[in-house]
Image (tube, rainbow, N blue to C red; front, side):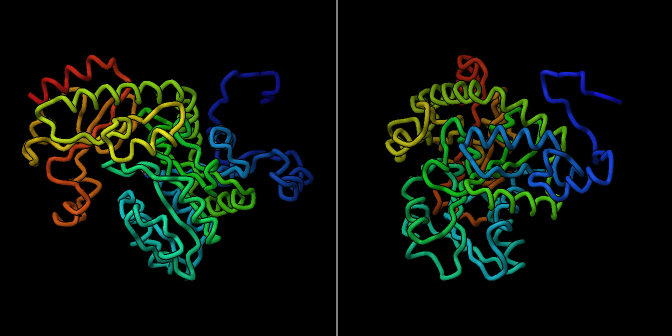
Length: 381
Ligand SMILES: *Cc1c(COP(=O)(O)O)cnc(C)c1O
C-alpha cells in the first residue's frame, strides 16, 4: 500500500513491530548511516511515535542531545543510570527521594554493584563532602514528595559541575512549564510522563532527555538493549497529552493555589504545604526559580486531628478527590503517603520526615475551582 499521497494532520499510531526495506542496499543504509538515515527498522529500537514524543519533550526542555521514551517513568531512571554508571560506581541522592526510585536504586541496582547513598536535601548541596571517589551521578527532584521541599537547582548544578559529577533531575512534579533543569546546568532531565506530561491518568510512560548527544545516544542504546521502549499507542497518548501541557499546568497551578488558600483558612487543617504560599519555607526559592509564575498542582496538608482516622473520614466523604495513589491527572485525587509511598518506613522514620498520621497529599486537577472548594468544605466538616 502506497501511503505517500496521504497527509494526516496528526501523526498516526504506527502500530507495527517492524518496518520494511525495499532492498539490501536500503537495509545497508539503515545500519551504516547516522540516525539510520531517517529510516525505521524495528520498534524496540525506534518508531515514529516515540521519536515524536522525545522530540517534543526535548524541545520543551531545550535538550540538544535527544533522549528516549520508556514504558514507565522508572524504566527511564533505569536507562539514565545504566547510561551513566557501571558496577563499582556510586549515585548520590536526597533522603526525600521518591520511594520507587529508592527501591530501584537500593534493591535492584545495588545487586548489580551500583551503590547509592542518601543525605538530607538541605545537606546535598555540599556535594564535595558527600561524594565518594566513585560517584558518577547525583539524582534530585525539583519538589519533594509529599511535603514539597523546593530544590535550589542552579546551586546543586554548580556543586556537581565543580566535582565533575553528572546531575539528573526528576522533573515529574513540575514539567517544563515550571522548570527547565538543563538551563541550570543539569545534564539529564527525567520525567514520569505518567504524570503531567501525559496528564490524563491513562498511560504509564517515562522520558529522559540529555544535553550531550553522546549521552542521548547511550540512553537509546540502553533502552533498545533492555527492551525499555515505550509502545506506539502509549507514545501517541503522551504526545496528545503534551499538546495541552501549557493550558493544564496553568489551571492545575491556579486551582492548587485556590485550594491551598482555602485550606489555610480551614479549622480542620493544621498546616498546608504548597510552594505557592508565602508561608511555605521554600516559597522564596520557588518564586525565584519556577517559571511562568506557576507553582504546580501538588500540595499536602496536615489535618488538625493528626490521625489516620481523620484522613479516612475525609477519603470517605470527598467526591472530587478520590484516593488514587498517583498524581497529576486532569481529575483531582488524593493519596495517603503513610500507607503508599512511605509505607516501608517505620513510624519514627516517617515522623522524622514530618509525615505524621494526618498528612494527606492532594493532586489538584483542572476542574472548576469553586466545585473543588465546595467538595473540600463538605468533606472536612
Ligand atoms: C510516579 C513517579 C515516578 C515513577 O514513575 P512511573 O511512571 O510510576 O514509573 C518517579 N518520580 C516521581 C517524582 C514520581 O512521582
